[in-house]
Length: 68
Image (tube, rainbow, N blue to C red; front, side, top):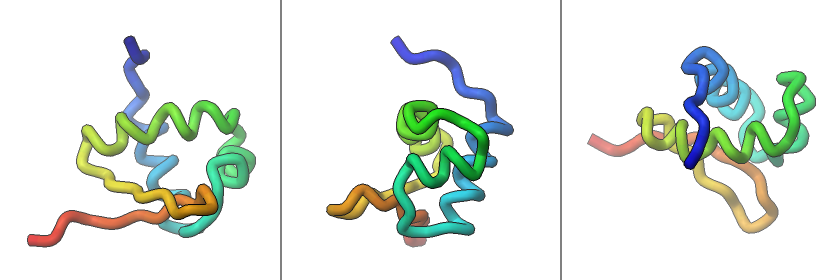
């Protein structure tokens, strides 16, 4: 069972992914002052809230949105 994620923290993680697309979770975590595991554990919660992120073959995270 996963812990509930703070909505402000999730928005901050997604905003950082958008500002630094293609970077790995460890880099993003350092920018945010979090542990790498906190960023990777937040990814499913981001998706549930409609913030979509894809991971490339090198582990980089990329924001994207659902087409209309």
